[in-house]
Image (cartoon, rainbow, N blue to C red; front, top):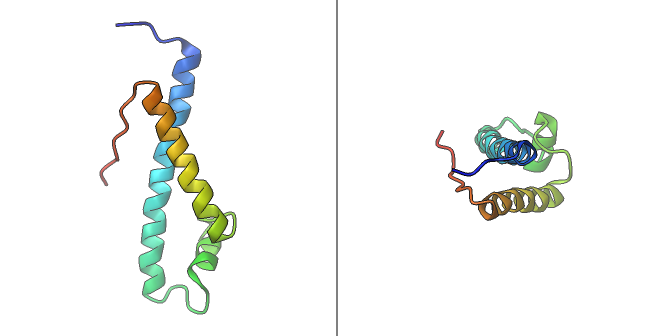
Length: 90
């Protein structure tokens, strides 16, 4: 098996961490959606509800595009490095 330079190892760990964080945040947002549908959001829309929960830093329309692209870019970079990315089961 070939050697892995420490700098590349660090880059891989950072990428894997970002992908895992994005998947975990997706799970939190899915849970927030259920709570919102049950009336937790009261007089707000879902985007404002996410901001209130701390799950969104930007307006929902901009945030969704950026998050999806960032996660896709990270996943693609891992694939180019020869690492298979599997979705984590919850």
